[in-house]
Image (cartoon, rainbow, N blue to C red):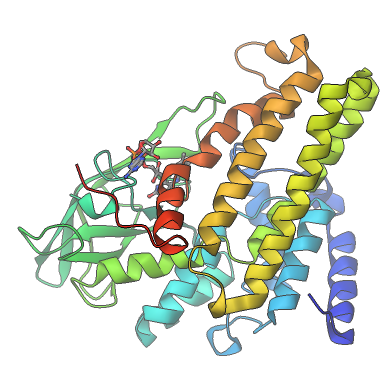
Length: 390
Ligand SMILES: Cc1cc2nc3c(=O)[nH]c(=O)nc-3n(C[C@H](O)[C@H](O)[C@H](O)COP(=O)(O)OP(=O)(O)OC[C@H]3O[C@@H](n4cnc5c(N)ncnc54)[C@H](O)[C@@H]3O)c2cc1C
């Protein structure tokens, strides 16, 4: 990606700001949060996020008229790379900033935009994503949660599952069936629902890592205002797919900087423990480095192509990074050997490598499983016929 003089100045300004801000009470937050570690220092990370927002470092890619910075693609890439490089903590408002915000900009009414975008930008309100249900994961069109009109409100009944960060969210964007008797993609609506109300119960799900960052969410006569439907009622599938198309985007470059740092630490560990001389492990570490370089090239290519990028490109990237990261977790266990099989303490005190190994099992599931991504690639890149539905 070609960087202009302004881009380099932007990078310098950001670097200086990050170095100057990750001090004092925020210094201890370096490296906190992220997949598998969302429970870490939530309140302090929220304060950090608001500090970022106050300095204008949230929602960079949103157009200026919606409260964003209207940053170029190159500057957004720089932001995510420098942010990850600085070790700044994982952002708590990313579901609002990266998924709902762009959705409201594309599909929301001016009233919805005025009501919700400023609070997302300032990190005053946190969001969660209510798509998956016990019977609707990969097959999202099987959503069974219903929303029935009642005066100027919707009344919502059903269950969502795997809802990340629902326990700290103020609002949920969810997919519900608003047309009684409708099937599959028809009759669904995309609703904005306040989480703090008596009709909603959030029950944490304990993960393999021993911690909980996603939840079951039960809607038992929960209510939201009638005008809080994004797009029109019945058009929820199109809006929901719009949201998915925003998932990851440029943030993927920041994620890769995080991966690079993890690989660097693993190479250090291999040197320290003396296993770096083992020919099989050397081979695997070199393969990991090559995989990362290929992933970065693919991501930059896809971003540079913009809307011209191949239809299957996001799926290719998802398969590449999820498998790569899972294999890194497995390799870490090999490098660290037998001690990696024992927790540091009771009841479940894992070190960073153990947590990475266990949590990365989820990488090939969330954001669309590997099998589903390969199905998409088979159709879009290879032109194979659709898979028969059982
Ligand atoms: C860490 C994590 C966080 C998540 N956060 C959220 C969230 O915030 N909000 C939300 O709505 N959801 C969230 N999810 C849910 C996630 O989107 C689903 O887990 C995912 O879509 C898969 O659905 P499922 O779990 O129901 O599995 P299923 O769809 O039941 O799939 C089970 C297995 O069958 C395979 N399979 C299914 N259909 C096919 C097919 N047609 N062809 C071949 N293989 C197939 C799948 O690949 C998988 O291996 C999260 C999941 C995880 C792991």
